[in-house]
Image (cartoon, rainbow over all chains, first blue to last red):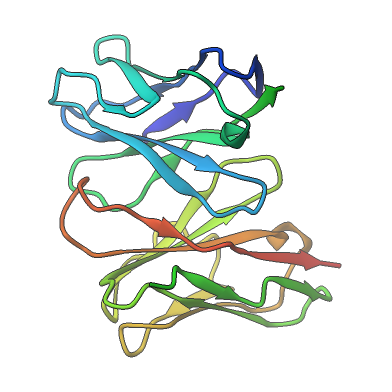
Length: 114
Length: 116
């Protein structure tokens, strides 16, 4: 079974600075999708960014970008110019080949210091 | 338009009671998912519907858990004879059903179930 590991339970960063959240995963599949989801205190999860394993180019969405290292099975999220509204739980998630369900990591709580 | 809604938002049950949790997906969304999120953990998949068909129920932890979506819209997750270990936030998500990976799952706010 696929597993997703987020080794940083908590992270903090100063407003306007850059922070990187780590994620590793275990799979024997060759094609899959990876996601980062944000869960603010209200609990409604929001998709931040997705990456298909076959695409070598790292995905970018405005201030959010990923560093996808397929061989190392690593998928980190970089948030540039951190804003107070970025404070939330961040979950890394995996979707296997042909599957519909998401497999989530344990999450990283991100705090933004003003 | 409106997002995914869930009701009730909070539910307290005595051990042994039956509970029913409701999910209203985004209108027109074909796919519907239920996840269970224990305190301090990431969500874990329970079950998946495409329209009214339950295509995957591999995550349901026991036969006390039952989900249905009879008309391909609203879904209900029922837990019979609740146990303390059932205490969690139950998240519902829906998606257009466009295809693998490119589909975005939109989550509801969840129902927090506390079993005393």
